[in-house]
Image (cartoon, one colour):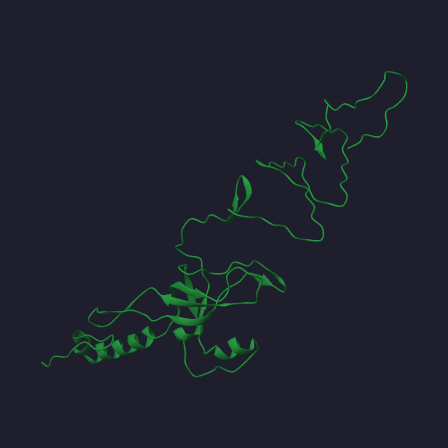
Length: 234
């Protein structure tokens, strides 16, 4: 009996019969077909700004084993398109960040020509099920976020550690009760403020140009009588 070193996916036991040899050949062909795997983001062309689609560099996390069980690490796959929830000019901008773990799927044909033209094209080469044709989906096995939209039985919670900004020609809030609670202050800057209410209740001091406008507001230099005061000097 001759001995042989393990080569590729083949081990010594795979040479014991024609069936095992053929089965090993089939398995080695199948093993070269990239389908989907877990990857880690190493770089991203976009970082949350208003921009067209972007690309990521990703590292497959599941190593390759040869017939002897010796592992080989993958190299980084560069310039892979990543998924964005978008329809027409409506989108959720949530760009991947370095260190993110997610899923990558691999096209059955070479997609390089479509990546370059964003149009129907012939395959860039004859490669099949190759890791070079990766598409990053993202969003698996990651940590606790500190900026998020959370949906639960209690409702929708929108949280940011820095700023939440609404920008539109018109913004309308409709609810039986609307509460504004600013622990430091609430500022309103507008050309005209209209308040339509059947009743208005104020708690605390109201100050306009340094003058208090509340239940303690008085005007000096007034003599008792039946006349009205002038327009308040505020």
